[in-house]
Structures are given as C-alpha cells and as structure tokens.
Figure: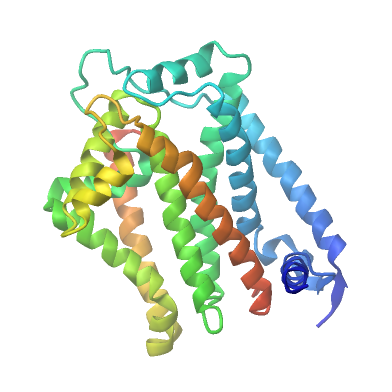
Amino acid sequence: MDKVPGRKLWSKEGLVVIFSLAIGILLSLLLQAPVGTSPQAPLLAHAVAPWIFGPVQIALLYLPPWLGAVLLPLAALACLTALPWLGKLGGRRLALGSFAAVGIIIGVLLLWFMGREYWWH
Amino acid sequence: MTQKRTQENFLWHIRARQVPARALSVVYTFCLGGISFLAFVVLAVTGVLLMFHYQPGYSDGYHSVLNLASVIPYGAVLRNLHYWAGQIMVITVALHMVRVVWTQSYRPPRELNWVVGVSLLVITIILDFSGYLLRGSQESGAAATVAVHILQLVPGIGVGLAAAFFGHPTALSGSTLMIYVWHCVALPSVAFYLQGYHFWRVRKDGGIKPL
C-alpha cells in the first residue's frame, strides 16, 4: 500500500475546516435561529416537536406512548448497537437489511412529520 | 514514564507520520467524522461564549435568548452559529454512520468502536434536544413535558431518570438548571472523551476502510 507523509492529510483536513467554517458562518449570517414563543404569550394551541424528534411525535399520534416512544426507539437503538453481531450471524445482507429497515422507518416518519407540520427546525 | 508512553501512543495514533495515499481522496470518507468533530469544536467555543449571557430558568431562559438574539453585540451571529453547528452535527454524524455501515467498518475488530459511535450518536441527539429545551419557549416547555412523561414510562428507573435529567420543567418553559448543566458540562465532557477514544481506536484497529 502506498504511503504519504501525514502532513499531506493535515493540509487536506485544514482545507475542509476552512470550507466548512465558511459555510457555517454564511448560514449564521443568512438564517436566523428560531427563538420560539414567549412563556408569557397566549397559550399555543398546537406545539410541535423539534425535527429530530419528529418521528417520535408521529409515532405518538398512532401508537400508545409505551410502544411509540419507548419500546420502538429502544428496539431501533438495540438493532443499531447489535449490527456487528448481526453481521457475524447473518452476513452483510442481514446487517445492511436491519440498518436499512431502521433507516427507512425513521426516514418515512421524519418526512411524514415534516409534511404534516411544515416545520423545519 | 508509562504516562508519557501512553500519551505518545495516543498522539501517534491520532496523528500518524505516514498515512495511506488513498486517504487523501475526499470521497474516501467525505470527511464526515472530521466535520462532525469540527461542529463539536464550534459548538464548544460558541457555547462557552453564549454562557456569559445565558441564564436558565422559567422566564430568564427565554429573555436571555431574546437578549442574545437582538441586544448583545454579535450575540445573534454566535447563537445562529451554535444552532446551525448543532443541526449540521446531527446530520453529519448520521451520514457518517451510513458510510461506516456501507463499508462494513463495524466488523471485527471494530465492534467496540462501533458501539462507541452509536453512543456518540445518542449523545449528539440528546445534546441537540437539550439545547432546544434551553430556549425556554412555550414549544420547549411542551417538548420537555412530553419527554418527562415518556421517560417516566420506563419501568423502575423512569421517574428518577426524568427528575435527574430534566429537573422540574413547566409546560410553558423547558429551561431548567438541571438541563443546563447536562447540556453545558456533563454531556459534552462525555462526548469529548468518547470522541478522543473513537479517533484513537480508528487507527488502532487498522485505519479507515474506503468506499
């Protein structure tokens, strides 16, 4: 295997840092982070979860809380954690299939949430 | 002497003198792990600066956020950068995980590092959520109330866990001292340690597998 001095990799990483920071600063100058509604304002009729918990909010609409918000997320987490051992047991197909199943379910619920709430933050 | 050797070993693994030539290609890893760590560093720096003005509490939380967003010089840019770095970190950590699965980098001898990575994903999500609660808005109060009720459903430890993590948020504001300390000190410290171990372990286990 061909080897190169480590400093060449550091230069590349330095460029990625500069590029990523530029994008972050640009985002911060152009897009305001939301502040939400004051606790002293009239009560909101409908509260929406932050986007990362959108899948849980959708699950809670249709499933009992112990299932939608406790058991299913824990099962997904257990499946992710156990991936190396699933791979040992059933090969790449089982590992990739389990990961894809978890990813697709979360992805569909997230899209469902975003479409339903028109809420992006 | 032993400590010095350990440090040298750690630095050697983090910053190897020679790397495989293919590691210079951007598509090798898409730099997703590195960008996640960079986002973490940005979050730490902007977070410390925000702490000079932020006060947790029922109405203090929201008012200090408003002050930061509209009164404090450069406060809005700092807060925006903190917010966007947080969102970017959640996305890059998730994409990093997809790449690791695609290249089967979870296979032996990397199982332990995979579990560390999953823990880091969970901590990242909790950090993002606790940051959302610290806004102190009505939305954060509703989210905190739902989260407390969900956590209390866990048999045996749920009630204690909810009290230890959330304190006593109200339905109108999720900002509490307890969440503040978890968000600013406890969780970032654990995440920092685990990231150091994660990077060290990558090289220890034979480097990165390409796409």
